[in-house]
Length: 328
Image 1 (cartoon, rainbow, N blue to C red):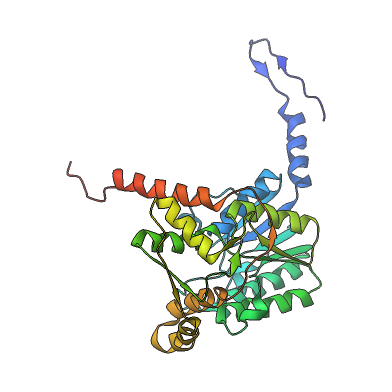
Image 2: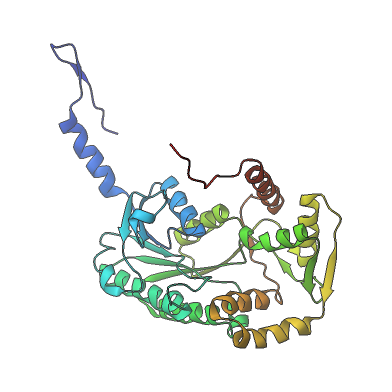
C-alpha cells in the first residue's frame, strides 16, 4: 500500500495531498470486481447484496423504482424493468458477474411465471452476453425435474436450459426452501393444529437467506456448474410441526391427511382459484410430497428463527404502530 503523508500548512491546518490520494481510490474502484444482482429488493436479493459487499465487491442492484427501494447494501442502484429488454441496454457494462434471484411467488401486475421467471431472466442473460459478462449465477429450485408440471418450476427450468446453452459460464444454485417458507408450520401451530399429508416423514433442510447468500457466493467463486443447497439441520415434516409447537410452548396436535387429498387439490386448484393463488399453492403442495434435502450449509438454526419470529410478533402486539392521523 502506498504511504500518504499529511503536512501542516502555515495556517496551522492539517493538509492532505488529495491529488495523491485520488488515484489510489480510483485505482481501488477500478480493481474491485463488479456484481450485478437482479431481484435485489427481494428477501434473498437483499442478503446477496450484503454478502457481496462484505466480500469487497462493487454491488450493482437492479430495482424497478429507486424511489421505492428500501435501503439496500449496494454501491449503485439501476432502475430498469427486466421484462423490457430495451431498459436493460448498457446496464451491465463492466460487470464481472450477474446473479439473478428474479422470480415471482405471487402473480401481480398481470405478469406470470413465463413473463418473469423465464423471459425476464432470459433478457438479463442476453444483455450479459452483449456486455461480455464472464459468469452468470441463477437461483433455481431443488428437484425441479420432479415438479415439471408446476408452472413456476417449468418456467424456471426452461430458463436454465437457455443458460446452460449460453457461452457465459453458468452456476445454478438449487435451494431446498427458506426459513420464511417454514413460517406456515408456525402459523398452523399458533392456530392450534398442524395438518400434514401422508405419514409426515418427508424430509427437508431449509436455509436462512443469509446462509444461502454465502453458499451462493462460494459456489459461484468455485465456478461450480450446479449446487444443491440446504441448511444445517434436516427435519421430517412431523419434526417441523413439533418444533413449531415447542416454540410457542404448546403440546403438539398433528393431523395426518390421506395423500390423495393433496393429489386431488393439485388437479382441482387451477380450475377453482385464480393463478395468483393456484400457482404458489401447486408448487408447495408438490414439494410436500418430496424429500427436499440439499448439501448442508450455514450455521443459523430454524429453532432460533421460530423463536425470534414469535418474539417479534409479541413485540408488535405490545407496541402497535399507530396509523391514526394526529390533529395539530
